[in-house]
Length: 299
Image (cartoon, rainbow, N blue to C red; front, side, top):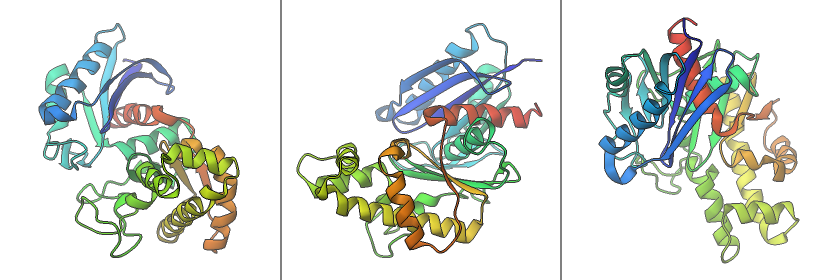
């Protein structure tokens, strides 16, 4: 029986895939820019290409796990809904297409669920069975893990923390709502706050200036951290998890703002909240996707 599995992670910017061994170690990897201008057919072709490079690189592959942005029916391997970050991706029968191409078992799930499973296997949530992952990247994603398994929900929408309304009547969202958390907690939100604070600033500059003690950066960062505290408080109130894991590109910069945020979180929420920064970075989705197919195959 093979000791190697492929885990793929499909996002609006990059498609990444890796060969992962039975201990969760990556032994080979590939990546490519997501060809969003080519629509669903182009995205699928790009995915197949990097998977093929790994399938035929000499490892005995036992199956393929795929985490993708959007709402997913994991039983059918179908993308139920995706935003225009992946144009035309809604309705993609991803599991069927990849299984037909490579004649290997395939498991498909939401990308945040995959990342959360990766953190539970090899990262910050190792040893936990009940936790929530909040990913702060270009957008905002989330995953709910209960009894060490990802909860998908009836329509694949469980854990869509980015589309919980944080401010009713707030910033319009592509999902049709207003005031979604994504528009206040994402990397794009940080860049907006940076641009509002000073000409030429983006999110990275805002974080760096805040860490350096800039008075100009203090107010927008205070607003950002307050909004993040509200979201974390709501998650804890609703799910009562063992821990909340923060991942994504914004969270990777946590050394610049974590201590200040922890002080502010205590002022916003009376709850006992355990928050941990993710440890696997951009590898979490690939490692977790490999874990998905291993779970499906009973490995």
